[in-house]
Length: 533
Picture 1 (cartoon, helix red, strand yellow):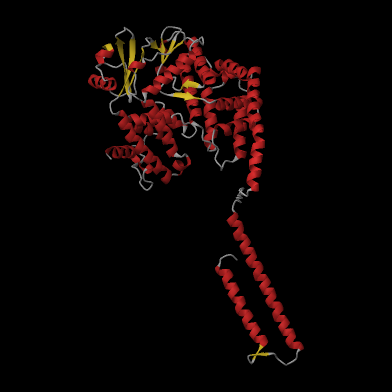
Picture 2 (cartoon, helix red, strand yellow):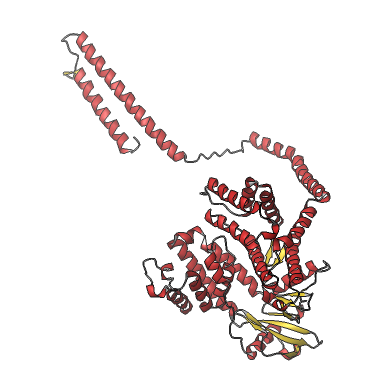
């Protein structure tokens, strides 16, 4: 409850009281900073969960405005390190042994410290220098409480705001929760590191990924080889280093379908003037073969100026709302296509093209999958890194031959033949099953076990209209019949002269008229009472 109050007070403090209560007006004097800056300050004040939330939210360019994203990218994840006694306690608890039995030496002051954990330099008894990543005590419990509160706030925003409902905030929080819980599990990060190392092995890249020491790794402690080097920004060989990084990341994306999703300068180490160390695989992206194919289709559509191909690819990548205006959507894609058709690869800004795509998606309510968003984040981060160490290098120009290589591999004769054979086997199996399925259907028909269900959209509306029509028709027929009967009686009476037919000593015509009038009034009342006239 105290944490809930702290979060609410922080939101109100930075001018987001309306988020919780639309009738509440915040103090106008508070609103002196931009909304992006205020959101960043909220995240930094509320700690680890909200800092990570801001970092992940900065990848959601399909729904979050650019001014907010720019601020969230500047989130500071620097906190005071935990003391050495707490570090010892975590290691002793995880491995049921004293720290000195695992490490020959252990530096008390961390190399780096962040909201979830910190990294220490240490040396094993074998003499191997290692980096030891220690998770903060009780951080899992703190984050679990915050995630529960975030779920409540997301539900509240969906109920009270149109934008919360439109963007399905509860789904976004669930996605964020899964991502953050994966980051809290250092075993998952260790597996990611090992997989990336295996994928890039013997590929000819000047890249180094640390080996994991599994015997000293758990959910809360990660021990890996120490990569000694300098900051990537200190290189004197910027262009070659930038090309190598671009080639590695694009190889991971296109050929492995598994890539480092946060290649910022802090996660790259310059081991020597040619070798690059890649660390911190807590945030990785996976790209399916289907998504790879659709991204290629977007590129093909742009090159051929085929809007239909681009739109179809975007439809297959994202989720289009039922209310989308396809005519306007096509017009916007046309404009995007024309913008990039005449531009040489060497002049295309990768981040600008991605943001243009997100702008169109956001305008038309297209929701992109998380795997595509992580890919976009990785590419934009990569472009920012390249601009820092080699401003004259264009990512798209360097990546073009890698894309061609992938295209040739994907559509080489062997691959096409293999795909045709696989599909032939699949369809062949279906054809072989047709006689059995047909016999089964015929047997069920013979036994009377086939039920036909027909659903007609808006059938109740149609039936109500039909009911009204039938009532009006009945009314018209009754009026006509009544008129004919009355005319007949009057004419009959005229032909018969003054002699009247008596019934119970009363004139029959008058009795018939009264009875018919009563029945007529009863029927009209029943029709109008039904509300279906």
